[in-house]
Figure 1 (tube, rainbow, N blue to C red):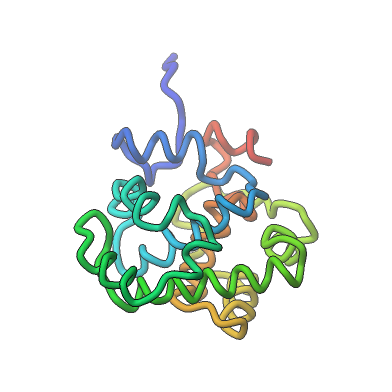
Figure 2: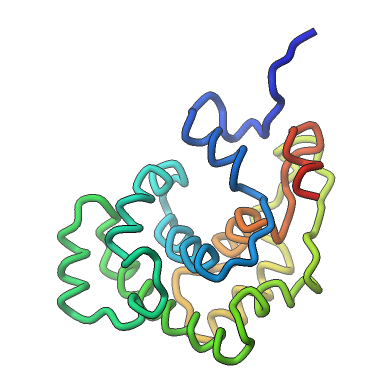
Length: 190
């Protein structure tokens, strides 16, 4: 009998991916600072692999003021120039500008709803949606829920946050539990 830990197969044998999977992915998050961090990271990921962004995460933390939404919302042209010269992040001007405008939209939601967490978790009545996938090929890349949230966020001024990125965000933040049922994290996050 094997004592090998069963994980979702997407993290493979990569230690960075395994650590992220084991400690963060799918863990319900209601902390606005972390919710903002992942808004920046997931938006930066559009068109790239998540592992690329995960390995640049510390650089993003430094470049984006410790993921302080107030600070990022106040970034101006000199900050955009600084970020465009930063080889530690994805140097895409549209993504960088969207991080700033997304920070501004994030703050508007906080002011309106009391927290971004209240806004996000309000779409699911404050309860994680627990799916029962037996294989990863069953897991969708977007759903009606991600369609609804991404549309609402777009209407509120968010960019680089379409339905596929939104669904990845919901999975990462534990709004949706998409660990396969055999994964050791499945029950832990339910």
